[in-house]
Image (cartoon, rainbow, N blue to C red; front, side):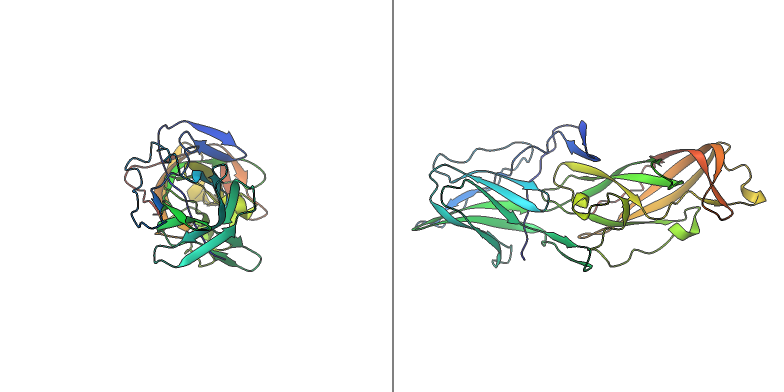
Length: 304
């Protein structure tokens, strides 16, 4: 198994809900990289400097567009392209993955990453500049793909689905040029001591209440998803010192999100508690029926 990626652009803040997944306005932009004919000449074109615009391939290009669909890169070729194979070349010049092109086909998929939760294993590309090469009988043609994910924690809200009280939904956005996934949420200084933990190294096992399907954890360029950790941070011990906790009290703590590549995301969160006390499970713990969460300034880091 080998891996690959895709290019970014960011035109608008507007989002659209699609099965717990939001697509930013620029996410429909196809990957367009520099093209290089290899039939006797080694000159290579350059990627567009502005990811917010999509350049058009030259008239004799075999590539029409490239985009990501979950763990796969989808390449659309021109009619009568004459291509027999697509190679994805890694930044170090080695073959990363390849796919044969069926005669008459104009759409080709290359699987570029894999999550194997049953085995606790995964495969993920190393960020960098890749080269997609279309091989023909007597020539080849290439385009560069800048493949660098960039995850950001952009929002926190009270998670109220199901019986998992006192939990938060964190919105993770990918403003980079290729897909990736987060795998775990832990906290620091949260009221619930059980939520204050260290990230583990099981990057191939997404550890969330939602999304449940591991593939749904993959965030493509220009996409954002909501993730909910296994341990709720806003849970208190039932004793006299916390009697008035739900009376418009505020609590600050830090969310830490594990990512497959790059540093973990760290973001300070302030929650305001109100409403009624609500028991959690069978133990002497409780949370509040109303939890308003917001990110505090200066507390966030990106994973890129």
